[in-house]
Length: 632
Image 1: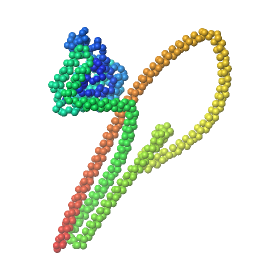
Image 2 (image 1 turned 120 degrees about the vertical axis):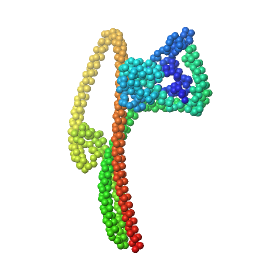
Image 3 (image 1 turned 120 degrees about the horizontal axis):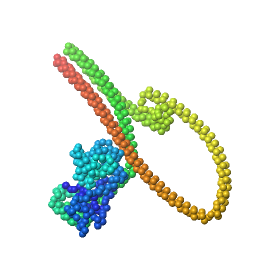
Image 4 (image 1 turned 60 degrees about the vertical axis):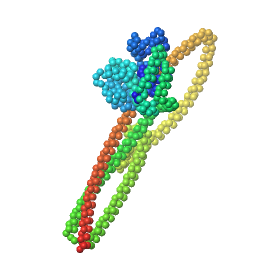
């Protein structure tokens, strides 16, 4: 069905903020998430004496509205109600634009910092990337871009004007907010288009043969009746059309056979889901930084696991190379043995052709053949047992290696806690106490001489230093006790002197109060009032300044943390991509080596088949000879 995607036929803002949805389009919409998370204020309704129509500039003296074909000409220019010059609102829009580009896979590096003042080239790339979601075959024109972009926005229904001159200096402080507002509106349009392309909210349960009613005569008749009634009331000064909307909705339900109970249940489910989504968004916003930190730790752990896996694969590769070398040697030995068997077969054929066999010779040959078969069978069993023994030894070796790596990791972790690792640590004293995963006998002996002796020397030095500090502490405690006793004596003397001074001050104050009691009373009241006033003014000013400074510092710290988090995530993703590429290359190399080994084994099997065919011919020849001997 070619149903209109919006509940209103005009993209202009409503002049009256009504809690009800417009019923021109019967499809319910999600009013909270259609245009993202930005809280854009709606223009308030004016009084009935100063109503303004989009089809004219004023209302006649008799309360009637002027028609769009009146003396005033075209419609008036819309003013953008969004606070585009508010720094907080602009930062919110930049954050939303950056998140949208990163989620949709923008082909290039984009950060919040780079979007503070982008160049014209970056703006064109972003505009082209977003516009391709509406028209996949779109390509940015090479000429007169400053005219094409405002025209395309106007064709899409962007309600605010974007000047041609602003396209020449996109990153300027006075032009970037308007361009950013246009990009945010374009993002909301893409989200709305994508959401309504994937779902059909109201008429999803109807049969396919009823889908063409909306564009039919009955639907057009109902819609034209609704438009004529509402427009006539609008020209008479009305701003709401509740009765007409109810009547229109009733007729539409009757036309499409709408199930009211199903619609009500779907609306309740939608409200519950929207509450759940809002709660999840609040939880994700409150604990977003902690989640990012947890994800960073998880990625670091995965990176360490990949490194360990890479080391294990390299060891496995080395073992495979050694096995391949051993198999090549065995293959050469088998070829030499095969060559000897061929020579022996030639010799036996020569003897067979030039000599007659007796029954004793034939019995001896059969006995030797059985003995050789038994020998081959026993050798095969020994080979299987040897391979199983080698496999068990390799498994035990890998387990022992893992335990040793765990012990080394615990040792290195303890060394980092004690600030002994790395070599430039605080307590390392220039010694390298780190143990690396190298298990050769020379390295183990070197670690013993490299780590044990410096550690013993450090333990002796620490014990000497501890005893020296203990003695110093005892001497200082004795000195402190002496100083405390002296201070106590001086405090007693000071208390006596203060008591004498207090008595003298009381006598002096009593004499002065008797001399000028009345004058001091009024002067004290005036001074206290002025002092209180100044103190209040100073506290209020200081509190406002501190609050503003704390707010600015918190905003700056928030933006810095967001930028650092995005940069760290980008670096982790890049490192993971490189590691996966290295692992894929390694797997391709291993597969190639295995395919080469399989080809060699196939060649060996072909040679063995040829030998078996020759042996079969020899046996047939012997049987024919035996038949001839028996016939004689």
